[in-house]
Every structure is written in structure tokens, then in C-alpha cells.
Amino acid sequence: MTITNGELAGELVRGATDAAKAGPEHVTAPTAYDAILLASFGGPEGQDDVIPFLRNVTRGRGIPDERLEVVAHHYRAFGGISPINQQNRDLKAALEAELERRGIDLPVLWGNRNWAPFIRDAVVEANERGFTKLIAIGTSAYSSYSGCRQYREDYAAALTDAGLDGVIQIDKVRQFFDHPGFVTPFMEGLRTGLAEVAAAGIPLSETHVLFSTHSIPSTDAAKSGPSFRDFGEGGAYAAQHRAVAEVVVAGTDANWSLVFQSRSGPPTQPWLEPDINDAIRDLAGNGIRAVVIVPLGFVSDHMEVKWDLDTEAMETSNELGVLAIRVPTPGIHAAYVSGLIDLVVERRDAVPVAERPALTKLGPWYDVCRSGCCENVRLGFKPALAGQVP
Image 1: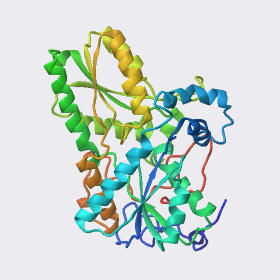
Image 2 (image 1 turned 90 degrees about the horizontal axis):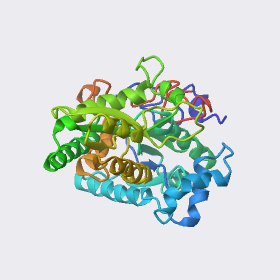
Image 3 (image 1 turned 180 degrees about the vertical axis):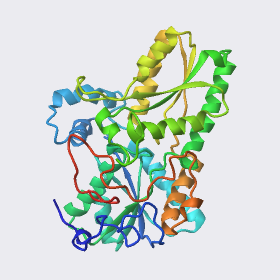
Image 4 (image 1 turned 60 degrees about the vertical axis):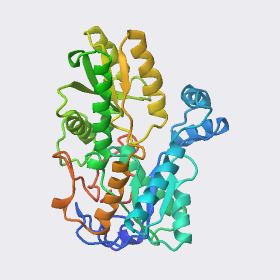
């Protein structure tokens, strides 16, 4: 395990700025950041990239290429190109335009976890340009290992691999699941989707809203969020989704449920359920004629939206004679882009917590992740930035 200069000085948060290094729940001192680090999952951009990309995603698990090909066909159906990289280019450009509109001089650097440009490339660029204080935006709104802590581990690994421990400091914006900028596009989309169903002559009583998100192992879900808070079954991950779903559906009188998609791993390992396709089958068997699918767990229309929802879930619905409407993800919706910049400004200016927008009682979430937050039960704790150790 690498020991950073901060740890040697007794700081609670590795590689953090002065305002965050002691580990407050919400930072109360302004920080003059040099740049924004936009961090994402990454994806292949051609058929030859698919298997190397999937090797990166599954590294350390010893999964043979023939098993990776089972997943590869999702990408191969789209020419081996994941939409996610172009979506991040578009988001980066939209963030830069919003920063310019507001007169905020902060460059946006972009790095991925699993494909070029990598997060390491972004921190090397930061160093070359003389940037020493970065504020990171991970393209995941909720608390979980893969949605938060793994990004924090990636920041730590990138600095170590590049020999920049103690040179560059990285903070992150809070998880933004209930920020109005993230939630507003879903609210608009749901109401449009319900209107389309009504226009098709299907009454609300025969319509069901499915809020869909990525399934994760049940053991990881139970460890999501800080351990000192009891979020019930599914941990903070499920609790955050349920809370946001209630906000999105409020005022519509529609029946709804939280469903999951894109599970992987051995069938013997429990993951969050029900699967969206199973849910559609059950609903059809109980007289439901239309479903409005809200991809609540996703910030853009990447592969798991295009394949799992737009392909598989639509096929299931068509086979059952159920009308299915899929609501857009935030993408580069103006409210979402503006909201992400609001989160950066919130940290730059140390906006008091009472003035920070949050649409559920769970927020505003922590600026600095709590000790032990979002543990990966299989892997244990690795060095991570932007949170109290471990």
C-alpha cells in the first residue's frame, strides 16, 4: 500500500486539499481548484477494442476471452462502438460551454476507468499544465462500490502510477442522486412518457412505471453508504434510488416499482432483484398494458441503456403485447449540465450545507466519503482518495 504525504502528516483523507484533508462531512472552507476532472467508465470504439476493453473491466478476475465474448456481442451489435465515449465528449463540451457562460475559468480534463483516455492520462496532463488541485466529477450519481469508491480508488492509483502522489490533490463533488439538475430530466421524461401512453388510449390504471438501475451484488449493496447509518435492505444504494423515484413520480398517481438490470457474475451469487424483464412479465400477467421505463440509475444512454433497455426490455415488452416507453437519461440536458457546475461551485465556494439543494431527506450527501464507505466485500479496502481512510 502506498503511503502519501498526507497520511504521513496524520491527515484523514489521502491526497485531499486543505479544506477536505481532515474529513469533514461538508467542507466549510473555499478551495481554489485549478481544473475539473471528468471521470467515466469508458468504452470500446471499434470491434478490435471490444475484448481488450472487457479485459480491463474484468481485470484481476481471470475471466477467459471466450466468456468475455458472451458480453462482447452487445458491443459488436453496435459495430464494437460504445456510445459512452462520444457522450463524454459531448458532456465535456457542454460543461466547458456552461463554464464559459458563467465566466468560470476552470479547464475540464477527461479520463476513463477502462479505456482511453484513462484517468492516469488526465492526471499526467494536469501535471504538465501545472494544475495541482482537481475537483472530480464521476459520471455516477449514487453510492456504491462501482459508482463511487472504485472511482476514488482509480484516482489514487492514477496518481501513484504517474508518480504524482503529494503533487496533485483530488477532491470530488458529492454524490448527486437527489440534486435537482440530475432529477429534473427524469421528471420531465416521465410526464412525457405518461402522456404518450395516455395518447395511445391506455388508462393510468393499466400503466406501470419501472425505475431501472444497475443491479449489484447484494453484499456490496448492504455495504453501500456509511456503515453507521441503517438504510435497510439494499443499503444506501437502494435507499437513494427509492427516494429519488418517489420524487420523480410524485403528483402523477402512477404505480411504480424499482427494478434492476445488467447483472453479471455467477448465478449462485445474490444480486439485487427483480430483473426488469421478469418484472415486465409479471406485470403483463396482472393486466398491465403499458410500462414507462425510467433509467434512473444512469446519466447517459450508454451500452447498458441501449442494449438492456432499448433492446432486451423492448423485446420482452413486444413479445407480451405491452407498450413500452423509455424515458431519456440526463445526457447533456441543460439542467443536468448546470447542476454539475453548481456542484463544483458548491465546493469551490464552500456553500453552507443548509443552502445546498437536495430533493430527498437523504441529502445533501457527504462531500468527503465516510470511513469504510462502500466497501467491496470481495476485494476489501484499497487506497482511495476523497474519503476518510480506509
